[in-house]
Image 1 (spheres, rainbow, N blue to C red):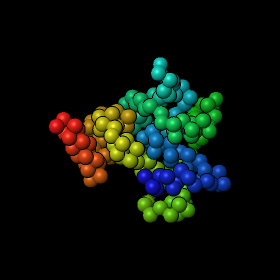
Image 2 (image 1 turned 45 degrees about the horizontal axis):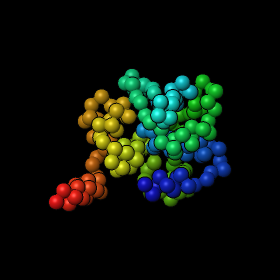
Image 3 (image 1 turned 60 degrees about the vertical axis):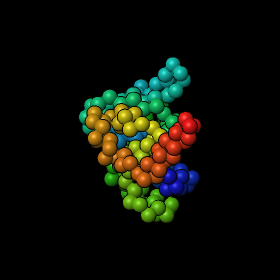
Image 4 (image 1 turned 135 degrees about the vertical axis):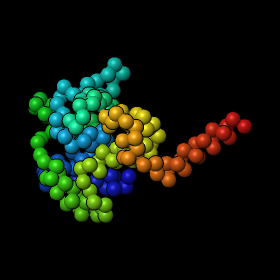
Length: 176
């Protein structure tokens, strides 16, 4: 999480790095794969009856429908981009994004090897799983048809196990 905050808090004057940062963070907060992010159109964003904004799209890789509720961080990034264009985000290559992420990781002094796919992994673990979102919901948002696929992303970390057990203990204490 601290690496994510380091990227979020860093201001870039270079337009290319600014765009790489925004696309990477958008994926961190939505779980969208690179191809799905680039194919996102304004009509893929809708507001539900409760006022919450959602992404409704299909995975480029499998055609599986995906519905993702938008967190405020993702909405802020979305608002930067032209909603009147055919595609929300400007076209680029995965190679260019990963090149930019290498520079960003050096500037932010992040030791991890950053790739765009790591954003999807971050969504599955740091953003959702570590905050108590059930694995079944994460699986749906990632567009996985099998829970076993999601389990690859969402390795249950020791801190998650500790957190879950602390919550269980608290519930058991309340029932005494």
